[in-house]
Amino acid sequence: MNNIELTESAKNRILEIKNNTNNPQKFLRLTVKSGGCSGFQYIFELDDKNLADDLIICEENKSGEMNLIAKTDTVSLQFIEGAKIDFVEELGASYFKVVNPNATANCGCGSSFAV
Image 1 (cartoon, rainbow, N blue to C red):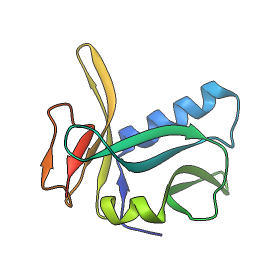
Image 2: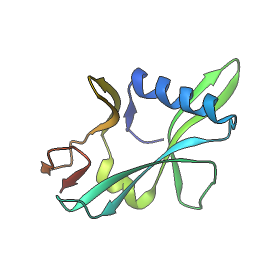
Image 3: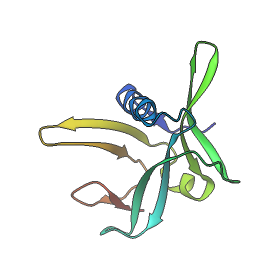
Image 4: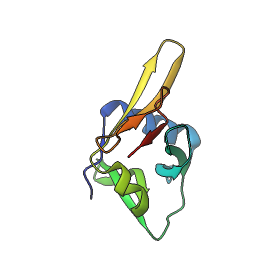
């Protein structure tokens, strides 16, 4: 386990999305790739495939069973270790937001960052 935090709002939104897909095996995958206006960008995907270097970000115990919520990979972890992932709902927009202590700069929209 690592020290990436998902807020209750983020967990609830991921679980809502999972329930709407009719595939309880799906989870949120957060990866970091080069690109974006600040150098690196966050990629959020709904996935159900397990990869060799997967790391669990969050699981919850529901009725005695573990419910996988989110994963990342070892390469991405070095950029997001210690981050907090939130789901924000504003007038006209809703999105996952990463508060990343490793980022030295962020773009205006918050989807890319520099280290």
